[in-house]
Image (cartoon, rainbow, N blue to C red; front, side, top):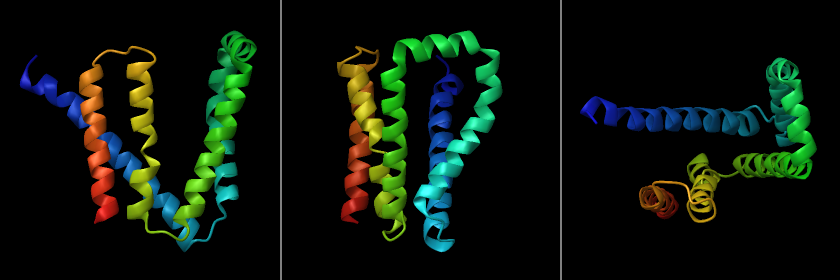
Length: 145
Protein backbone atom coordinates (compact mmCIF):
# COMPACT_ATOMS: atom_id res chain seq x y z
CA UNK A 1 0.00 0.00 0.00
CA UNK A 2 1.41 3.39 -0.99
CA UNK A 3 1.51 6.40 1.28
CA UNK A 4 -1.28 8.12 -0.65
CA UNK A 5 -3.47 5.01 -0.40
CA UNK A 6 -2.95 4.83 3.35
CA UNK A 7 -3.93 8.50 3.72
CA UNK A 8 -7.34 7.97 2.11
CA UNK A 9 -8.95 6.36 5.21
CA UNK A 10 -7.54 9.14 7.37
CA UNK A 11 -9.02 11.78 5.07
CA UNK A 12 -12.39 10.01 5.16
CA UNK A 13 -12.19 9.98 8.95
CA UNK A 14 -11.35 13.68 9.08
CA UNK A 15 -14.15 14.52 6.64
CA UNK A 16 -16.59 12.54 8.76
CA UNK A 17 -15.43 14.43 11.85
CA UNK A 18 -15.95 17.78 10.13
CA UNK A 19 -19.47 16.78 9.04
CA UNK A 20 -20.36 15.55 12.55
CA UNK A 21 -19.02 18.79 14.03
CA UNK A 22 -21.05 20.80 11.55
CA UNK A 23 -24.38 19.13 12.22
CA UNK A 24 -23.74 19.12 15.97
CA UNK A 25 -23.16 22.89 15.94
CA UNK A 26 -26.28 23.36 13.80
CA UNK A 27 -28.29 21.29 16.28
CA UNK A 28 -26.91 23.32 19.19
CA UNK A 29 -27.78 26.59 17.44
CA UNK A 30 -31.26 25.39 16.59
CA UNK A 31 -32.22 24.39 20.13
CA UNK A 32 -30.37 27.08 22.12
CA UNK A 33 -30.17 30.16 19.88
CA UNK A 34 -33.26 29.81 17.70
CA UNK A 35 -35.20 27.96 20.43
CA UNK A 36 -36.52 25.24 18.12
CA UNK A 37 -38.13 22.56 20.32
CA UNK A 38 -36.23 19.24 20.11
CA UNK A 39 -39.41 17.34 19.22
CA UNK A 40 -40.08 19.68 16.29
CA UNK A 41 -36.49 19.41 15.05
CA UNK A 42 -36.68 15.60 15.15
CA UNK A 43 -40.02 15.69 13.32
CA UNK A 44 -38.57 17.93 10.59
CA UNK A 45 -35.57 15.63 10.22
CA UNK A 46 -37.89 12.63 9.89
CA UNK A 47 -39.97 14.38 7.23
CA UNK A 48 -36.76 15.33 5.40
CA UNK A 49 -35.58 11.71 5.38
CA UNK A 50 -39.01 10.60 4.18
CA UNK A 51 -38.90 13.04 1.25
CA UNK A 52 -35.33 12.13 0.29
CA UNK A 53 -35.67 8.35 0.65
CA UNK A 54 -39.18 7.80 -0.78
CA UNK A 55 -38.08 7.73 -4.45
CA UNK A 56 -35.39 5.16 -3.62
CA UNK A 57 -37.90 3.06 -1.64
CA UNK A 58 -40.45 3.15 -4.47
CA UNK A 59 -37.79 2.11 -6.97
CA UNK A 60 -36.82 -0.85 -4.75
CA UNK A 61 -40.26 -1.65 -3.37
CA UNK A 62 -39.86 -5.44 -3.41
CA UNK A 63 -36.73 -5.15 -1.24
CA UNK A 64 -38.51 -2.75 1.13
CA UNK A 65 -41.40 -5.20 1.52
CA UNK A 66 -39.00 -8.08 2.17
CA UNK A 67 -37.01 -6.14 4.78
CA UNK A 68 -40.18 -4.96 6.52
CA UNK A 69 -41.59 -8.50 6.54
CA UNK A 70 -38.41 -10.01 7.99
CA UNK A 71 -37.19 -7.17 10.25
CA UNK A 72 -40.34 -5.29 11.28
CA UNK A 73 -39.64 -5.35 15.03
CA UNK A 74 -35.99 -4.36 14.64
CA UNK A 75 -36.86 -1.50 12.28
CA UNK A 76 -39.52 -0.17 14.63
CA UNK A 77 -37.16 -0.46 17.61
CA UNK A 78 -34.34 1.35 15.84
CA UNK A 79 -36.73 4.04 14.61
CA UNK A 80 -38.14 4.69 18.06
CA UNK A 81 -34.82 4.49 19.95
CA UNK A 82 -33.02 6.64 17.37
CA UNK A 83 -35.60 9.42 17.65
CA UNK A 84 -35.67 9.26 21.45
CA UNK A 85 -31.87 9.40 21.67
CA UNK A 86 -31.76 12.37 19.28
CA UNK A 87 -34.48 14.24 21.20
CA UNK A 88 -32.64 13.56 24.46
CA UNK A 89 -29.33 14.86 23.04
CA UNK A 90 -31.08 17.97 21.71
CA UNK A 91 -32.79 18.57 25.05
CA UNK A 92 -29.45 18.43 26.86
CA UNK A 93 -27.82 20.67 24.22
CA UNK A 94 -30.43 23.35 24.86
CA UNK A 95 -28.80 24.14 28.19
CA UNK A 96 -25.40 22.40 28.33
CA UNK A 97 -22.22 23.45 26.52
CA UNK A 98 -21.78 21.70 23.19
CA UNK A 99 -18.22 20.77 24.16
CA UNK A 100 -19.63 18.51 26.87
CA UNK A 101 -22.52 16.99 24.95
CA UNK A 102 -20.94 16.33 21.54
CA UNK A 103 -18.26 13.81 22.61
CA UNK A 104 -20.72 11.84 24.71
CA UNK A 105 -23.22 11.87 21.84
CA UNK A 106 -20.71 10.17 19.58
CA UNK A 107 -19.85 7.45 22.09
CA UNK A 108 -22.36 5.24 20.25
CA UNK A 109 -19.57 4.70 17.71
CA UNK A 110 -17.57 3.06 20.47
CA UNK A 111 -20.48 0.79 21.38
CA UNK A 112 -20.97 -0.17 17.73
CA UNK A 113 -17.27 -0.89 17.35
CA UNK A 114 -17.22 -3.21 20.33
CA UNK A 115 -20.42 -4.98 19.26
CA UNK A 116 -19.13 -5.44 15.72
CA UNK A 117 -15.82 -6.80 16.91
CA UNK A 118 -17.09 -9.05 19.70
CA UNK A 119 -20.52 -10.21 18.51
CA UNK A 120 -20.16 -10.09 14.72
CA UNK A 121 -16.47 -11.05 14.50
CA UNK A 122 -15.74 -8.22 12.08
CA UNK A 123 -12.18 -7.86 10.87
CA UNK A 124 -9.49 -5.53 12.19
CA UNK A 125 -10.72 -6.10 15.77
CA UNK A 126 -7.53 -5.00 17.54
CA UNK A 127 -7.20 -1.90 15.37
CA UNK A 128 -10.86 -0.98 15.89
CA UNK A 129 -10.59 -1.43 19.65
CA UNK A 130 -7.42 0.71 19.69
CA UNK A 131 -9.17 3.46 17.71
CA UNK A 132 -12.15 3.24 20.05
CA UNK A 133 -9.80 3.57 23.03
CA UNK A 134 -8.43 6.77 21.51
CA UNK A 135 -12.01 8.03 21.27
CA UNK A 136 -12.59 7.27 24.95
CA UNK A 137 -9.40 9.14 25.87
CA UNK A 138 -10.68 12.10 23.85
CA UNK A 139 -14.09 12.04 25.56
CA UNK A 140 -12.48 11.83 29.00
CA UNK A 141 -10.06 14.65 28.11
CA UNK A 142 -12.92 16.91 27.06
CA UNK A 143 -14.93 16.01 30.15
CA UNK A 144 -12.02 16.78 32.47
CA UNK A 145 -10.96 19.90 30.55
